[in-house]
Image 1 (cartoon, one colour):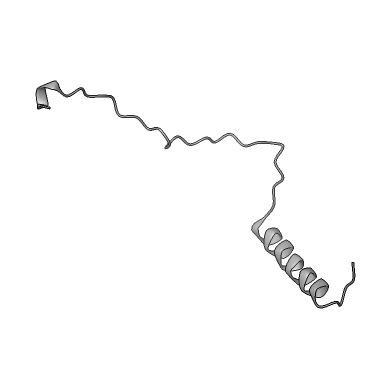
Image 2 (cartoon, rainbow, N blue to C red):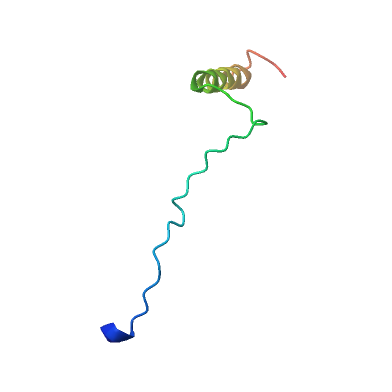
Length: 55
């Protein structure tokens, strides 16, 4: 294909669009809370696994 026959298309920003709208219905957690919940679940699982807590 020669240079004369090439079709030039406009550049697009597909995939690079940022949406600044925030959902009001979403649960908002701080990173500290997520880490605390994970630590709690790990400790709870270990206690159940080793028979300290029976479910």
